[in-house]
Image (cartoon, rainbow, N blue to C red):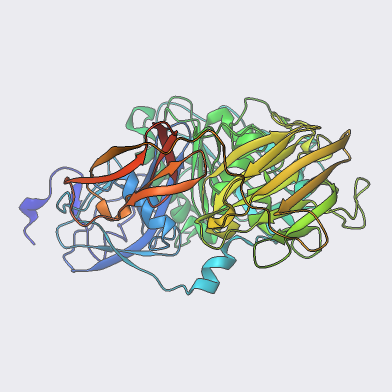
Length: 572
């Protein structure tokens, strides 16, 4: 490939994009930027990563090279990323991305240009079977953490190494002088009831071949010097930090140093408050956000394959747990995870306190429901033998419902929404994969929530709350059909006021660039019957027309689906 194709710091990717040549003896005071190596091998692969950048729309596809550098793929749509994750074609941190001949990297901006046509999509390669995919989220044991303080060309991370280590690991962690009572380590330890521990990575000295500035790894923290200015942005600085860590400690990637590596960037480097790569080792923070416990838990949650918690179809709006909004507080608010995330993490599945109801199995539970803080681990002063999680399983739908009592006590005493209420959350992938959850109901005493046509049947399901005992438990009835001994199904009632007069009803659909992801249905809200449906479609940017004779004075809901979610557009 001709050298004339290389412009400034933009170069052609190939087998050794991927292994950039680092300066070693030329290091003087700071780590120098590596010289790009140009190669031409066709069909090179890298690890596909997906990033969640807080308070920015959509998911970003990235390419991780073997040395840990991460490049944002800038000509792939967020919609494609979402749909590919929903169908498991793309599994962040596991899927390989095939990089075509002619793809280029702009290292100064941290971008990978695939140089494909607008309607072309990346080629992916998966090696996991379905059972392995399901096990990505059972996270237990001890995971190591390295916190990176950054001295850039013109600015530095505000907090010292000691302050950063204290804010992440805190008291009783073995970190010298640490006394912080609320931190990443303490909250995950409390919420998991000892199932998951975050510990400082091992002490480590600088490599003998390294002559630049920087510190040893001490108490799970390190200081890195880079020649990047804050004006160059987080994408450029992130990869320079990665290269510096590799050189400083003679490793092939920072992932060798710890299970989770937190980059605490100097103020002014990025507009986002923080972001993390899903099912990965890396998370990035805007200066002091590195010390806020809700941001720490949220971003490491993404590393653990957790998606956002939403409400009213608004990202982050479910504030009952830490996968919603993050807060500018060092020691709070104390929160765990909503019902769907708690189910996904698998911490409570070893007891009969996590139960499943379905059309084909047990159909009802009547009794006390406690919260995840009441998990019966034998050492928990708040423990109980009551169920703490209930899954309403729907075999014929993409999503299921998860129910818990959001007890405002212990490690969840700072929950910001639905305190001491019964919360119902909807999520997909059987509650085992990366899927944004939706808070659909908050129930107090006397409240009831109905599920019409449960799992496509004519059976009504319902959740009702009879009593709430402070933060200890709620007395509930959760029933698919009747809550009697035989679990006899109850048919949805036929309304008396739906008229039979007919009128022509027409639906016109114009597809986008991803027609196979689009389906829709028109539902009669009087009897919950789907009277018309369409999709998936074959042709992009094409108009399709559908019509039916419908009751002229009934009320209808038009629901359109993509591969990730369903949205009710309106009533007609």
